[in-house]
Image (tube, rainbow, N blue to C red; front, top):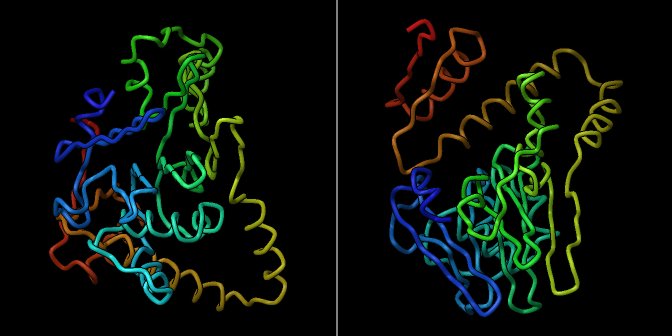
Length: 276
């Protein structure tokens, strides 16, 4: 399974297992390239283990809160912040605080529970398959297809829908037997079964915005949009690797590039000519 995902994480690999669970990780270093930040990452006590894909942009603010509550850190990575938050606050409290794109598997040995989660909009994928003997999960279907005990069968209905509409909800796979954790999905897996939850719903945001609409002027909306966009771009520019933008020629990518240059003056920009 790990070899099937090697191209996603060429910088390092690691694994962890106990009698009932095995976790493997391929690493692409963006924040804290030191060996201390490699995964799977364990808590100092050894009873919390994390395999994490993506980035939580507000990790520095979360780290300050955790430090104020007495926790200490051995790396400067966002991975350790995610791990400490999950272990200290519990997934149901911690995950809604994460601002970013992510999917992860977190095992808490204190209650023998495995937690799977996916970011609000489902930017980072997480595929799941139950073979009857094992529960398999990975960042891509191809890792599950690499398992000898998974029967490869095309879901003809899903394939037809994809071909007809040219796109499809990322919660579905074209392979029969493979499910996707839905956006904002938070699953708890124990010996008693799987508890499926959602930690966020877009309708809640729409309702909040609708209520605020009645007492907010156009000028206030514009100021809020400018502030939120600038804050978001600044958070996205946190990295220990070189950054670049891909520009489409439209207003949106040009605006984001201009804002990003404020925070990363060395930023490179690229335009891809689709006619080539």
